[in-house]
Amino acid sequence: MTSLERRSRIQAILSESDHPISASTLAKQFGVSRQTIVGDVSLLRASGDPIIATLRGYEYDKGNGNEAILVCRHFPSDTAKEMKLIVDNGGVIKDVIVDHPLYGHLKGELQISTVGDINLFMGKLKQQEGHLLSELTGGVHMHTIGYDTPEQLKAIRTALKEAGFLYE
Image (cartoon, rainbow, N blue to C red):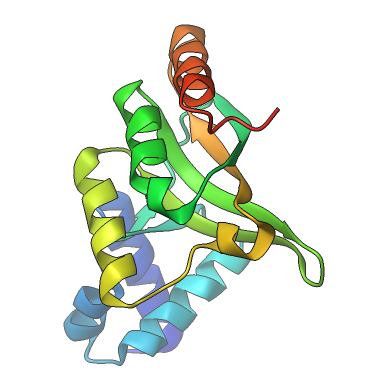
């Protein structure tokens, strides 16, 4: 199988799937390294495929339509609480963005929509002894939030403001 054929199969698999598929799973299926799959997906994304990376694997962006960027600030210890306020009010945390003084806009894909996703993120953060992007900017960061109704966005804003997380 050529790399072009493999990328075509990856497109088909992801478009037919109703759940994210990890690079490791795809690598096993095609008998290649995980890094080869990461490269294939990068090439597909560069050519315009709306593939997103989630905590659970790759999937096509289903496009919610309603999005807002909210600016927040909090300590790292408040990360799970912030995420839960957003998710509990019907939001999807699509990403985190910081404005770094040297590199400019740094963006991390999140795609967090459930408490399970929050727990997975926090578990990986702890396991990998990682650092949050917001630690680079004194806690100030932005999230692209997906939502269904204006009422959900209002509830998310209110919850974040009441918790002292909304940066205004």
